[in-house]
Every structure is written in C-alpha cells, then in structure tokens.
Length: 365
Image (cartoon, rainbow, N blue to C red; front, top):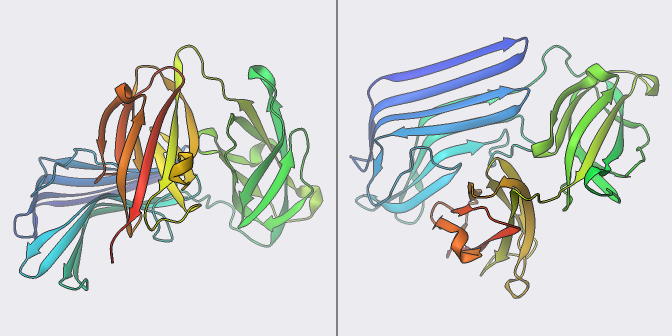
C-alpha cells in the first residue's frame, strides 16, 4: 500500500514568548500501487499568541485522475476511485482536525492535527480495510504557567468605537460551554468560571467587527484575535474581588473606496436540512453559515476588508455525507475558478459585494 524514502519529523517550542512548531515529511512517496506518487509530502503547524494554524505542501505530487495543488485547501477530499480488485479509496489532502476529531475551527480550537495525506481504502460494500496517514504534525497553545485550579470570576463589557458610525444593540459571547449577552455600553454581572486560561468568542454580528480588546487587570489578556472574534484571558482563583474584566470593542464595518466584501451564501439542496451549519474559510477569515432555502437565495454571511482587485479563495470545510453540487458567483465576471470536488471558489474582489453561493446535496446511500 505504501513505500517512502527519507522520513523527517521536527518539533520545537519555547516559553518566552510561548510558541510551538511541528513539521513532518515523507520523501519519494508511492502509495496505492503507484496511483499516488510525490517527491515530497510535508505537513506543518504553528501555535503562538497569534493563534493556531497548519499547512500542507506537496512537491511533484500526482494522483491518477485528479489535479493536485501544491498547497491544497484544508480538508480537500478526492474520490472515491478504484484502488484495486473490489477496492475503492478516498484521499483527504491537508486534513486539519481539532481536538475532538472534527474539522479544525480557528475561531475556537486551540489544538490542531495536520495530516498531509489521509487515505481510506474500502472494500465493496463500504467496510474500511486500510487507513494510511502520511506526514502528520500536531500543535497546541496552552499557557502552562498557571494550571486551572478551583474557580474565579469573569465579567464581559461591550464597548463601541463609533468612528465609522454608531455601534448599537446586543452582542453574544461563548465561553466554557455557556453564553452571555450584553448590550453596548454595559457589562455582564460576575460569572463564575474555571480558573486558568479561558477563551471567549464573540458571535459574529453583520455590519460590525471587533476592533480591540483589553482586560482589567491589564496582564490578564493573553490573546486578542479580532479576525476570529476571540480573546483569551487568565482567570485567577478567588472571589469577585479578584475577577477578570474583559472589554471587547466593536466598530462598524464600512466598505471603503479601495475595499470590497465577499458575501458567502449557503443553499440547502436535496437531503440537506435548512439551518444546518457549514463552515467556510474566506481568505484568512472564518465564517459559519446556516443553510437556507433556494427560493430565498439561501442564508448569507459577509466577510469584509479585502482590497479591490485582489484574489480571494472561498473554501467550504469538508463534511462527511454531503457534497457541493453547485457553486455560483455574482457578478459572474468576478469568478476566476470554481472546483466543486475541492469545495473552492476563487474570485476577484470588486466594488461592493461579491456573492459566492454554495449548494450542497446529501450523498446517495
């Protein structure tokens, strides 16, 4: 099933600043009796104060019947295809998984496993007879200097930067498996949470973005990641007097004269439930879009702040049991390419909105 040449693995880390890097590679790969070959297959990941991320690189890689990218998008699934007598295979390139084994979510996951190539071979009827993973690396970001012990208190306050127009209304935050909602200019009451490192994620609200975050006391802020709408804070053990107060500031999203936005729409096709969530990567931004009815154009979410004229790739995260059956771009002249098998569309950003619509259909059987 698999032969390789030289195998390499490397892991490095440091504590000041906290950072971890992992890399794994296999040279001269020949898998599935020559159906998959590559001069080099490599995965790598990095975890630091800017978040957790991973990549895969393929050098002179070929898979019979498929065109391979040098740097495939996350969770690119190819197949099934014939792999031998009464055997079929699927190949996932740049498989990125979170700590629970689900597709990695940069907005919430603090651990990533990157499998450069994951091959699954099945017998006629669907039973798995072989799984092969080539070049796997893993990274996580955990503050080790203060282990969780007991409980402490968190308070969340919502501030507004009204430079682009008034920010109003209520905002919802997720943390420790719970939710809290707070209006602009107000704070939650003290909330009891586990002591240690705590990730707080703001639920996206159209027309606004996070422009900054801070804590009181100041050293309690471990990470502010506006692009993924999250902050990581330290909770110290004790009562309300020693609570951590997190201030999150939002600003209205304004499409400037040199910027455009991408509107991602999800349409529920045959077998897909309305309201079922799908995850997308839009350039370096993340969106979760619930499927909507085709008669209403689906449900849509907006990612903004892209330079006009720039190329941006929209990738739908792999989900078992469903496939992309249609990709549509409006205006049509902004479409550069679309690949339903890879669940990607590349567009050129223009004035206003570039609309990319994905329709999904549940696989037969």
